[in-house]
Amino acid sequence: MDDREGVDAYLAAVPEPHRTMLARVRAVARDACPDAAESIDYKMPGLRLDGRLLLSYAAHRRHCSMYPASGMVRAALGEELTPYLAEKATIQFTAARPIPDALVRRIVEVRVAEVTGAAAGS
Image 1 (cartoon, rainbow, N blue to C red):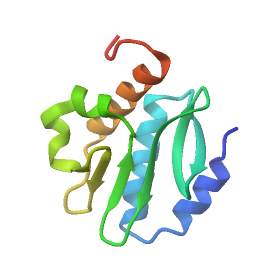
Image 2 (cartoon, rainbow, N blue to C red):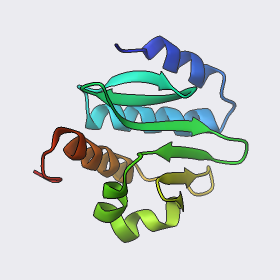
Image 3 (cartoon, rainbow, N blue to C red):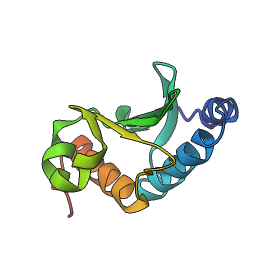
């Protein structure tokens, strides 16, 4: 079930500049996987494909985070992802150090491949 209204409400409550950063993550991620449904899980917006969580994202006081919940993302993106890693599967970014659209797209592509069982980049 798609919860676009829930995601819209979440983003509307987020102060700037976080709102703009997360809206951009949302747009790029949806473009990378238009078949994904938007959801709110654990009080965070995210995307689900075939009922499985692709990623979630959230605003925090001093930064924004993406949670791809996957070691496969780290393995596939290596050094490209390293500057944004805060923990095993937590990606942090700020207005001063935004996450590039191309990296968001690649994260989604890797997660889609993982969720569907396809080889990344196919």
